[in-house]
Length: 358
Image (cartoon, rainbow, N blue to C red; front, side, top):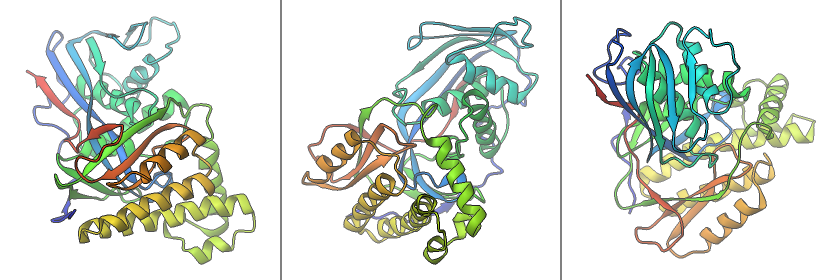
């Protein structure tokens, strides 16, 4: 039976990683940074309205290895073109591709050291598992960022906005900056309070990749605008109730608000069900979440819906749902150990950290 106990609150005053150098880093100093991806168990499209989420950092990683330098030179086995530019922008040429994320991080930090090295990742790109957020945090730590987990998350969120012009919330960055091994994170995206909740070994979390996607050019920004319009009518969605939602006369905005309000409640109920060891209830809440994302928020796709249905029909699977921003990506399922389903078995791991910085 699944039980999540002994909740712990996270102290945001703590530094993101030991061994930080306060921004004083010598050229040619070796560095190795490791940053996990993340999967959200429940609570999607709630973070940018200050709602509740329950993600875990997962054992898929982005690593940056290299030495501090006077410019940025990074290569990746997953990208054809390297990233190579001066810290002061004197090269003058526009930065494209994955280099946009790197440049956006440096722009947010200000005067900084560069790095010469390599980027490797086992986080699938375009799967909705926070590959871009992991890259942003990894670059920030590799060039000597020395701040709290919240400061690091906010820096990376701003970099994401600058690089993509997509108004994403803070869940991805805060999760992978603050995660603890063996724990999920109940995050209030308004206050940024975190409750770390243990995940027992007696449950398997399975992630199935369905279809590559990118939030750029998707309906993500439109959903953010729709929520803002709904809030003009009834106030902050994070504190709204079902009766407030029903006052919205525009049917499309009412459905968007209904998802957010109901999803926040599902996060609370999911955490309570897990704490009580009620795995069946937790699974049903995952299914309800998917239906809401599919019908009220309209961010699922037929291939994802089919994967959820197939998983939920499998013995040993208590529930499944789309996870992440939607429009493709992955499905997450809550399973009994040893359940025969296709997908990656993931486990909750610690957040971003320096492996070597000497």
